[in-house]
Every structure is written in C-alpha cells, then in structure tokens.
Length: 241
Image (cartoon, rainbow, N blue to C red; front, side):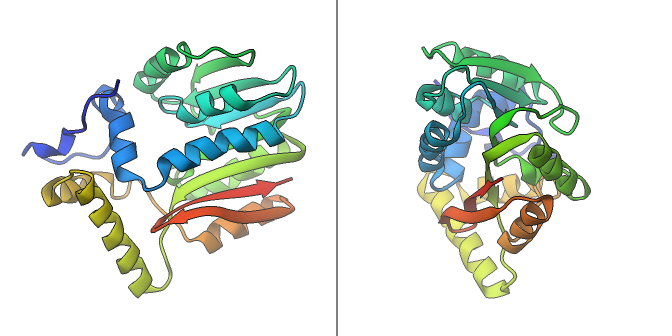
C-alpha cells in the first residue's frame, strides 16, 4: 500500500521534481490525488488492450512507473503469445513495479526494464502506452519518439497517450488550471503544497495543446486520432496505425 504524499508539506528548499525513492514511495497516492480520472484511464487501458493486443505481439508501457497500466493490460489481454515490456528510467520505480506485477496472476509475461525510452527499440508492437510520460520528454525529442513507435508498430496497432495539456485560449487555460488545483484541495492537499509542487515540476513537466499532439501523431503516419477522455487539463488520446 502506498504511503501518503506529504513531500511538499515541509519547508525545505524546492528542488526540481525527480522520480526518486521518496516519490516512488508515495507515487500511487500522489497521482490518484493529483490527476482527475486517473483510475478511469487505467481501467480503460486494460479494456483497450483486450481489444487491440494482437496474438504473438508485444505491448509496451513506456514510462511504466509503478506498473498500474502494465497490470491493467496484463489482467485483460486475451490474445495468445502476447507479452508486455514495461520500461522506466527510474530504478526506484522499476523496483517497486516488480513488487506490484508480482502480485498478479496472468498468462501474459511481463518484462521490466530500467532504461531510457528514447534509446530502446520498439518492434512487433500491437499496443504502446505513454501514460503521462511524453510530458517529461524534452520537446525536441518527442516527434522522434512518436515516429519510432509508429515504425515499430504492427498494422492496426494502437498508441494510447495520456497527458496534462494546456489551452491556447488563456481564459480556458486559467479556468481548467484553477479547477485542477481545486480538485487537489478537495483531495487533501493544502495551497502551500500545491504551490510548492507546481514550482518543483515547472520546466520538468512541459504540457502541450491537443492540437500539437494530434499534429505530431498524424505527421508520424497514424491513420486515426481521437481524444477519448478529458477532465479539466488532463486528457487521454488514442491513435491507430
């Protein structure tokens, strides 16, 4: 069970956000109290995996953190000969992910790797998940990553991309940002915690507009794109090759 996130309750100097042991210990609590609709997104990743995972193919969870999306896929995939490769560059996350995956029972094999997703090969993929991961990749490298995913994907394969987003309309951007902060307050975070977390994650998490995401995905060659879920400034998208 995840510990409660109290990282930003103290008065220590605010440093850039990193996925270290301290964050890994409280990550499940942190993301569920910070991302509206996170549980729904995880559940639907499993539903989509059941539909799109192809026999004798690979499903990738890129930036797997504690393995919530991996576990959802593993519990729902029915295709024979399918395996999951879950990758994260944080050893703290991968170590705890191993414990999470170890609690499940499934015929779908899971391989965990501590690696940089920008450097790993993608091949024979029928499903690739980037669940709140691309927003941490440098902007100049995002198109290359999406193109690599497309190139390594089987025809009919699906990309699931969940991201924090911003809006070109300044009034809407302020509204949804404010509603997100209100959501966090309702989940027990103080205004001080919210402010300190925002300072820590600025320039580490760089959101984009839905228009930018769609343009990049379609430029890579995907034939279809849609936003299937959105709550405030959080969205999950799908694209099909």
